[in-house]
Image (cartoon, rainbow, N blue to C red; front, top):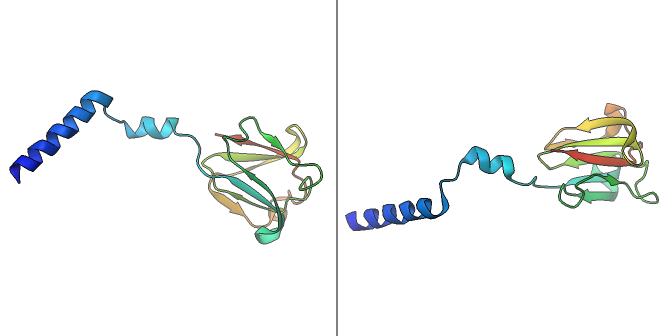
Length: 124
């Protein structure tokens, strides 16, 4: 049993020497945002789902498709660790509202932004 512990300690020591110690604070600061933001046409996450985007596939923000979803979004699940800013106009213009990270909004009417979203950006 003693030899197994010594061997495990040596292996761990070699790994730290080769790769360096991982600082948990640094690792989380540099980790990419996980999850996605999803947006639906109707309250309570029903109707057509028009948006399913991640910070990685929408790094500079996205316009919501003009034929499907534009000015139709009524509920949002922000499953990222970023704030999502919804804009009333295309190209990130007009009135805006911030949706907190890891939060769901079953009815955007409750925050005064129902059927208004034309574009959005991740604020990480």
